[in-house]
Length: 382
Image (cartoon, rainbow, N blue to C red; front, side, top):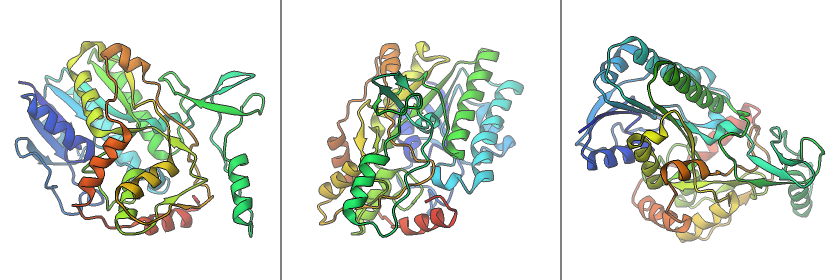
């Protein structure tokens, strides 16, 4: 039996991982601050009572030290999450994600402990735009878009024309048309938000300290994870949960741009399996892995699927507006984790969404999207 510490273990991904670790016979400690934005009612009902819960914040070094020094392995999931919100709650995101990780690493370097492996949750957001191919220039990485400006007073037909011609990034070398291709781990990183910068720093600090002191570290770049237990009342969480909350409350899901931008959606159970493989396999040590499906899905298509599966008579609201920092396309090249560990996501999107829809019907969902959208607009981000 191993003693495993999971920071942020009461949260969405963390709670599923805790269940799996306990099922495999591990002794698990959860260290979580139960942030009210994520856990408005405190410790969630899904919390596994076979684990040990300690309420604490990774920004508190002393409290963190007490749990780290009792662990054989640490899975560091604790983080402030949300791209848009990070652009105006800068200190909070930097303190939670960068300083919190710095405290963890400082403990591992300077205190007596028995930790033999550290897993760090990184994010696909650190790539910025994904990788593309240009017929003339080959593989290219475009800069972040400024976004086309919507023409005041334009008709719906004109908006569609604008969306089709102007949303897609162009080749940074020749200015020609480019096509999105899977994004591998060696793609240059162009962080598009304070959140993305903080995840990039988490990853790089952990790998540096791990290599310096011979402590096996693995960084997992999660793509768009979906599944049960994601907060449906937190308007700053993943797009799937935001859409679910809207549809469950009989409101149309709001889709920015023209809805043809793509992301890589992966079932939370598949993410848990990737984490377990990395914990158990030495081939993962000191590596960075994409954790995704490798399959792009249009955001507009995702909105339509959720409406269909919840059996609502709604139509997605396509805004033809741009949010600063949003990328057009990014989906995973999963070659590296497949070759090293044999990992491949197994849950088809429709199957996963069916499970998610069944869960969503039974839980509370307060639609706070309008509040979040208002904040973004007030801050000049839309």
